[in-house]
Length: 445
Ligand SMILES: [Zn+2]
Image (cartoon, rainbow, N blue to C red; front, top):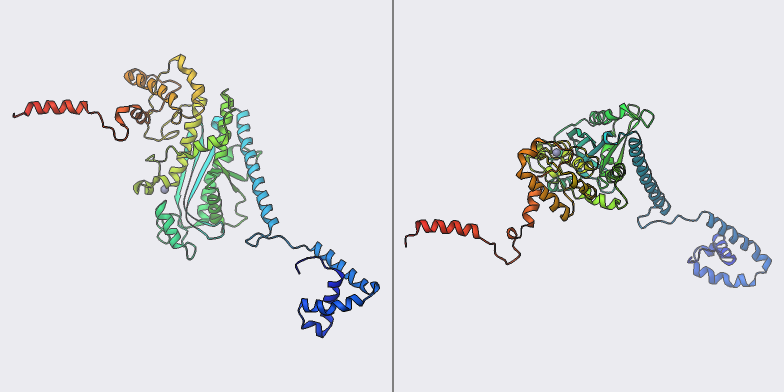
């Protein structure tokens, strides 16, 4: 049995076992030793039919060769096909994103091109299939010039969660979004209505342009990590929608690729070299999530329980801020609070002397926030000089400006006295002098 090939003798043995009552009770090795003497006595002519039987069964076996299986019992070829499909889908996505941006660039509309960012929170994921039960949905419409123009945010009450998974769901909720579980969940309970509502909100921007292009698809962007969640949650919502009711399809793309492609093309437009830009750099910049702890951009519920980091509304808005922070300066787009940056940041306009505009080439490699320390100190000092003459600078609006709120932290860090090394002592001349003065006054001795 070890060798898969059958020879004439083995064909004879199995034939003898099949047609002989005596053979049926013997196991294969007993039958082999029983048949050996017969086979040796047979002439080549008598063996002929068995040789051809062996040949036939070898040919048949080869044709019906069994599929190789993975350790989970899935056919290897199926897995390979799925992998190929995934690679193809990614390629297609990259090409599509490039085409969208290139088209906008050619028609000089890149800064007005609208993108939709969307995100889901979920209660629980089914054990071995890609089913996520949605809990909260948010999306925002974003363009470089206008920043975030509108947002859509809703809680979802799916009514029930997968049987046997409430403990999982509870854990997930407690450690992340803290939304109450069904049946106590808040928000929309009618999945069909919700899906149609989301779809019509998503398609608003699409209807005006792209007449020639796929009218039936709505492209939304989310992070690579959230892509399976978002895709699955949309499937969950759309599950009961009659197929003939709406043929529009929601396509989920990777926001990291959009971020990279957009930055690359914007640098190209601005005439700055983009050779050093690569996907991993831009992705890391995005994943740093600089605005993680920004307040006042989450939904009321998450704002109140101080979980805004996990709120989908806060998430999609932060993505908009990251895009603005990284890209807008290259096109000299003026950042507006609440649209391009957190609403609480008050832009502080500074007049930049003509000769320092050469800084821009360096700055455009990163954002102001992430600029290397040398640039930062340069900008910081510029900023400080502007503070002294703030009355003048505040009134004069310039095309380039620097958001100031974070610079204060940086200033403190560079001051050695504020952060003594381990074991060192904080110098205390100011405190001392105060103390002495007080002491001197009330000194009874
Ligand atoms: Zn929320």
